[in-house]
Amino acid sequence: MPQDLSTDRLYAKPQQGSGDFVFDRQVAQVFPDMIKRSVPGYGTIINMIGTLAVSCVSEGSRCYDLGCSLAAAALAMRSGTAGRDCQVIAVDNSVAMLERAQELLSASEEGRDIELVCADLRDIEVRDASMVVLNFTLQFLPLDVREGLLRSIWQGMRSGGVLVLSEKIALEDPQSQALFVEMHHGFKRAQGYSELEISQKRSALENVLIPETLATHRKRLQQVGFERVEVWFQCFNFISLLAVK
Ligand code: GEK
Image 1 (cartoon, rainbow, N blue to C red):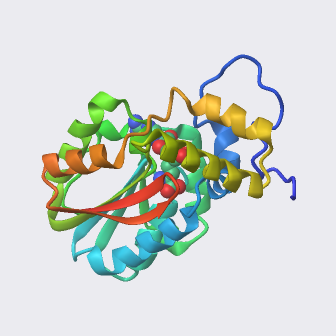
Image 2 (image 1 turned 180 degrees about the vertical axis):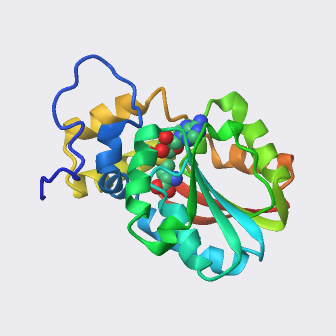
């Protein structure tokens, strides 16, 4: 495996203490490599967000990428809506992520057309949206704010608009959960991560990434008002839902 500066080796050496995972400059630098080698199907999900945008985004509306990291989903929406009248807004509260996103987006005409906002997504007012993406972001928010956030997103969406909600989920059945965790670790080994990297990353995420079950996600999306909720992608415990207002 090549070991350049953009390769994720952040957990390759034994860590001092038990630091929780943070989205800092080091993470931003290696993020594309990290997420591709950690989330099975990430590239497919990003591509399909672009495909969804082609048919789901309506004229004069807004598209939001909430918890955008390096704005890959925003860029996919922008490509899917090229030449059309809509605004793509990408939000993240990590300054390091947004600085890197700005560098990457400024390299292309489509990228320069995306509005980057540095803010906590709980403070963002979603308005007139036909497409909203929460691609592996909700899982990092405290459990007690998730419903309120989804409700305010729903309120800011056009009727018929779509929310793409991708999450790492927990399985209700403990044996299935154990099997999927093992399969995910197998995926990470196949991507070149060592046992030390896998276990240290797992510990770092333990208090930070709080997964819920598919049933919990479904119920809450319906409770806040989404008419239809479908799983359109799943690989082990990584899923993506499409919720239609
Ligand atoms: C992608 N969607 O590549 N407000 C704003 N941003 C937040 C908040 C918050 N309260 N909490 C976390 N974030 C991206 C991948 S990564 C997923 C999303 C991962 C941001 C955080 O700074 C980070 O950039 C992102 O949510 C989660 O399609 O690393 O597993």
